[in-house]
Length: 230
Image (cartoon, rainbow, N blue to C red):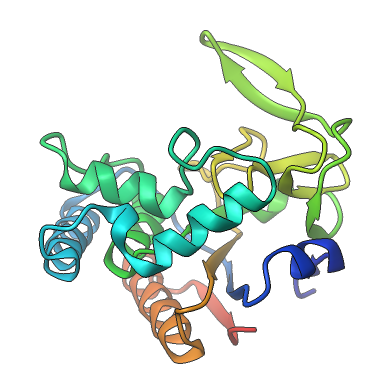
């Protein structure tokens, strides 16, 4: 059954021009990072550097739009950066991009190359439909603090992704919960590419097609469905 994903009217009103591309994948074979996934990350870092041409990531018009969106719901974008900007900063740093696992490397590479937030979740650990909402502040967020499991709560009005069990990603695209993260045991997943104006529908679709191609190469035999940008 296709994943049920919705964007609340509150969020759509708060940040007009938001669009996303959803990719659903079944029968994936994940595993440790390898030469192929590392090559994707290295290429993405080179493409990012060429795109920015010595500018900082937050100076890119798309990242500036995300900073404005974070400010609109009360977050401080220089302290809690969207995942696209945070990864871009790491890509340009001396340490470079981390190697996590095949699936995470694939979507991180697309995030960096196209300078947009991209995430992935294990659908076998979801509970009910996935929703982008403004939080009440009561929703649980399962994370790790000081090396130990912990439960936090978003701030009232914070934009979050959630399901019936709680928050899956805080501050829109800042920090993912541990419950649905992609591990080497994950076999079914969805990937979400998110964009704001000035990114066009065509640019978002191209990024989605690139991720689908990478997933097919890294996990032959997987069933990949791209749901058009909207």
